[in-house]
Length: 461
Image 1 (cartoon, one colour):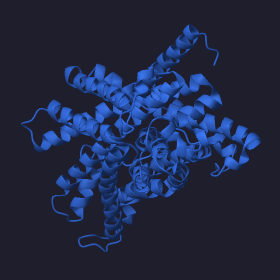
Image 2: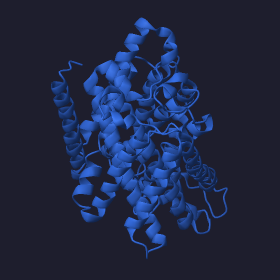
Image 3: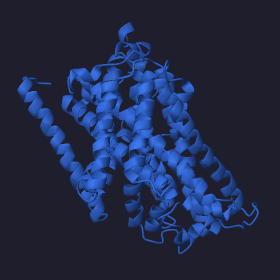
Image 4: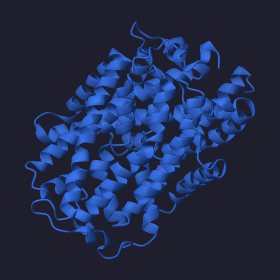
């Protein structure tokens, strides 16, 4: 690795600045997998699966842990601003890099719009006289300004937003354990609730159904490998973040869902409101609903903030291979790719407008056509690692400072498991099938654009 490709020079060479501190990257890693889907969506998953939802979260989490380990191996061996897009390009070919880069950008642009609408709904519940579109606009403008400030301002904002989410989960875990053991005022020994109507109350296939739903809740963990490229010690940041994801999945998701089905019988867990709010209410915490709503808002803002950052950095990286307009590379004096940010957010603004003009058509298509993108990205990461590991072992084994467990068999198993989840989307329900079909359309369009662009340029890569 020469001076120009060393981790310390990546950000400067690309015109960015390594302004993120280790505490920023650490908190991005910790909070990256905690979104509103955990605080609200877990109730619906539990009703779909029953107490065995714990297994669904564990299996989905295992896939993500393995994918992150593979990504960590590649990111520590060759830190890159484009992260898995660059690994896909060098390992599988230009088609893979182009496809995963644009799919990922498209996914996060959709998430930005979705979270802006979700945040607006939360705020309107508190201040009903203000139209939703105004709240959406304010949230978009606020976090666009944060991202335009500097990488450090993004990191600082994410640090505090993630801190609120993590603190809430920690309090829930501590008090929840005391409650189910009967050691909290008003609590009683209720561990047995996890077997109410039988652990597999809704049948074994419901666990598979649950995996299809919950695996998207984990998407976002990979952001840390993109953010680390703008830190002063990218190798160390990625190594620590990807190594610690095991306990983050176990504690934050599996631990929380296990406690939820112990605190309250699974049939009594709410599906349209937050099961965490209901649990805090049982703990006797005053204004539990309002407190958790405020926490959910911070989770929404955190995802919105991260989404803007991630979409802009992926777009910025795409231009490096000639896959986006050259002017996307322009940065301001603080090393911020401001044009990439504005392009990404402008699409978000359009999507927000579409939500109010045609929520059942255009906005529905934007959100659902990116529904299976997480699985496509995971599959390409797994395929890239299998190829890249073989090359590194032959050419530069000293760069393998973090290794995938059980290579190559566990890597292959992870790839097969990811593809199995994609296939199972055909058999879950009509909504999930629609997400898969629309996502496949998105995949086909992006691949078509790539091959059309390659034909026009006469490239053979």
